[in-house]
Length: 246
Image (tube, rainbow, N blue to C red; front, top):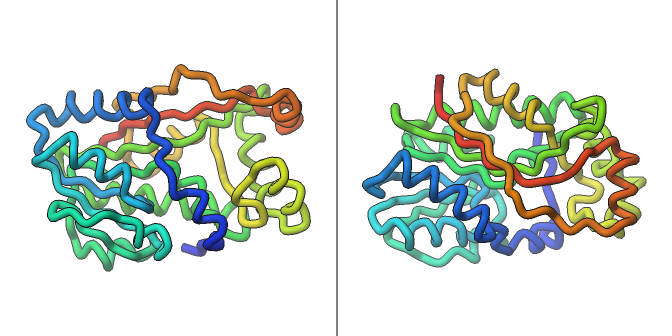
């Protein structure tokens, strides 16, 4: 797996909590339905500062967690908790670091679109490999929870994914994309449509128990709406994929 790395300056912008009330409710509804006794162990891949994990451990006092992230900057922000193990490692090293551990839930919150390589094809393979690794660490009743931003095309479903990758990863365009608000300018991201994500999950043996988009619309300034049209994007929204093997 070939992965491009963000700078510490770029990573510092991820020292936040993006789990707004609506998003949090989507996840807890799935957990409460599938693990009603509140007893589960989970892996937070790309868990960064650990805020999401801490919130889950507070809500579910019998849960246990492992946070894995490759950013020393963000890992240092984690608060200690006797029910939380913190691992400084990349997704590509998770097999060695986890040593066969299995989890009831593997969370990947806005992680997959960051697993970029120099080419679009290799980036897609990186994401597929990461999801496949997550599947291998599930218990028999396990679930994979993926929060991602959907990028559905107006007419051609997969076109926005391709365009956004090349524009955001271009070093020549980095000054412009940074001004437009892309904190991964020069490194890149790889968003997908709902159909593309579901096809990817299926390719590694996962199927969606549910796929739920947040209802609260994003505020998008007029000039960015024009940019979305240029990039062939119908709209942008966050979506929770709740997956199981099969």
